[in-house]
Length: 467
Image (cartoon, rainbow, N blue to C red; front, side, top):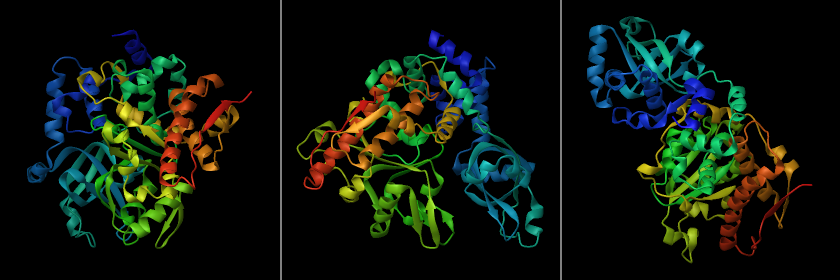
């Protein structure tokens, strides 16, 4: 192991994993954090660990097309184990916990209340190994005839459930800044040796919406630079819309089911291929999105005014010739993003065109933080803020608006959480991060000047360190 590998293993123990092993074909169809969990668990047992992992995946994570084979085994043996993202909902009328088993396309099984009491987060979905029992008594109970005779009777979660954020913050003190940044880049599955220092910081900027509340980021760049991969595999608190049609019910609130939409439940909602996103009722959704992006509040139908900390990410694939053409990026944006009031609510435009297409040399080698551990860390970092520290450290100038300053504060607060999560830094060390936050907002201002030069005259934003 390298010196950095040894330090990572020494400081983080079981939370450190050899990142290259999770690319094995046998676990390729599993979410990254599950693949890393299994590989790490069995790798430590020494020889034949690949066979062990293969057997576990084949036996406990069947292909959805094998649903009938799985149910047949449950019927014959009475009990099976299954790897899945189990989700429980509360049925108040029946006084039961309804169970959703995605891999079997079953939405009406039941869960033991003891499991829900022990692992409350299963109410919003939790990956793990579940023990399912054929419970024929269910259908004979009054009022339960609509439920499948399947009961979740035992459960072992994969995802990190109880995490002490203080341990993570203390760990930062063991690493130099450059080592720490390399550790984070490895933790998202990439090889820091294949990226320049600036590119590493841009990669970390992608994580800002996951660790900072209510920050809205746009990234445009070539295909295959890892945009979608990151949000799909680094956090299980995200929802990705990859083109297609999006409704207000799914996004904000379903009045029929009386359920919050993704903005009310997730840390980040990602609009992938934003140019291909269509809204079912744009006259309703676009104004609601604008209101939400401004202050984090939304309302719909019978739902009273609600607040969420969900961040929004708008991504798109553009080629370099489009980026630097006379029409520039404006020509790529969908109509709803060409509304200057909407675009002004985007806090920063990340230059994805500066990041290379990922090849084998860009994939992580050596130890990094396990995906499930890192996902939970990012989630918990949302509970702290460095916005006051930004205000104390910097003065903003350049004819800025309140919205400009707020945008820079939010992006910079997120970057500080990633690079200096323990809160120990000299103000001069923040200048580099502040320039990135400023640069991201400047690009938004440049687009606004193209869209509406009279309303948004060209200006250059600047910050300086307070004396």
